[in-house]
Length: 157
Image (cartoon, one colour):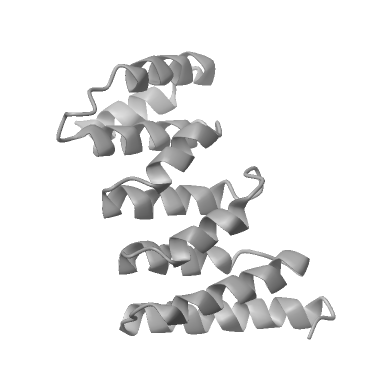
């Protein structure tokens, strides 16, 4: 049902959909057990219309629900060129208590180039301060390899 609604809304005019979504999000009851999920659905709706909603993104990145935080971290990665402090936000996520959130943040850091790749490489090291698992080890290794290549290609150390 939700998937069909998303498909239907993706074909509608972005201005109308995002205005209605903003109104709907403002009307949500914070006491509702599905509140965090609803906010995530709203974030995905903005993403599907390629409309950056920084306030909503920042709120969902701090959600008490790990699924919402990890999904918001993916959205942050997709919007990285349009969020001014993406690296700082990813740094927060790399230090999250949830291994799922940390995994997505480490992966997100692999998308940076140039001077940002150097900063991303510094941030990714912070993941070593938290417990890891086989998945985090793999993504950390691959992210480091990718960033190292990009830093070398840019003439860095």
